[in-house]
Image (cartoon, rainbow, N blue to C red; front, side, top):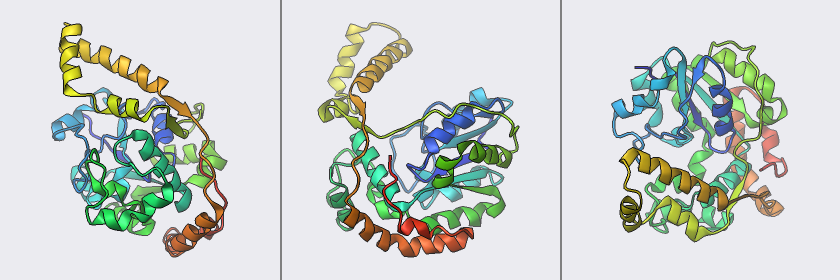
Length: 309
């Protein structure tokens, strides 16, 4: 049974979804279609996609003869994921993607609103300012399974999060991708990543835009699709007296169509310039530490304009 030999561990909203798609097109690479398995990181309580190691490894059954990997951005800011991944495969390679912290968090908050479960504070500034209360267990949405994912500042503790992977796997097994490079010269970044994974780096693919900013048309419908009442699911058995697997497939297609209908791609409004500057000042010490850790000057992040999408 194949097991993953590389992990795209985040950070969130830094191009990880796109990179998974591009890498999966390579004939020597296999990444499961299911997004964000989130098997590792037991300090978080996620919706279970694999109850045990056997179920987890089953996601890679179709990857026989290829190198297998997966991408779950939660592994970046989980305190346990690095150790748990190491325990499965100490020879694994790690890919980390990073982005200017204010733009990252603004985009991350927007994504959580779209998901319709883990975040219910519509205003970005208010959501960040609610973090101290949320660390005390207050103002947590009812459907949110893990309060950790609402601690936004943990996501941009870049040096601490990266160091966990350096300590476990060594720097030579950790590949860092800066979002600025990803946007400026994606083919070059892709080639370097293929070389890191030790597969044919001459392979080329189209780099179509993936995972742009989205907004739901109807919040109530989005919640209904994500958490359908048990009575509706039970009623579906009578409407569709078919084998369970076939019924599930039909319901998933219907659900997918409704979700697509309820989704609109919109450009995220610019963040208030004054508030952006205040956040950049707040995160400037972290950016300086990151610059030292990676031996690359990234302090322009502390003065950059809005580059969210």
